Image (cartoon, rainbow, N blue to C red):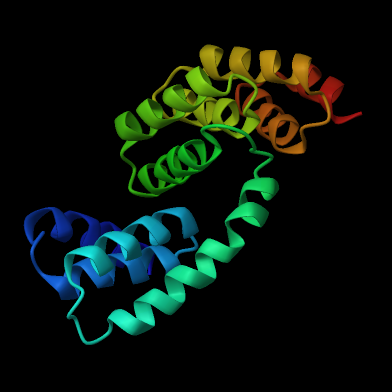
Length: 178
């Protein structure tokens, strides 16, 4: 399903006026558990292709997702003005990471951090990109800074320990495992 999502995103850029592709993109987001993107894609497809035979099914799916938005935002610890937009950016970064489009991913993560500097997942994921791009010191420093603010972040600790061990810094890694 992941490969299909990447392919249909690209195909949708080329075939913007094809309802099958527009509704297919919404379904691909939904199947890959990107509900905010699915909701936007469903809304867009429904608006642009109201006569499409499957539009009623799409409306039902969109309504189901819409009803879950408050719970989904809460699960991301997002509230207040701009929370929905930050959730979209968060999904955008995940989609880009899966597609190995690190420039797009970094752009989305940096925008999240401009809006919500304490959004831990963004810092965590930026450290992964730093590592992938061959910047181990930057990755480790970013995670260390993150954990200074939130030492209970299990993802951050796990990532930091992995990077420290991979870098041969076993004593530093042990300090974080106790």
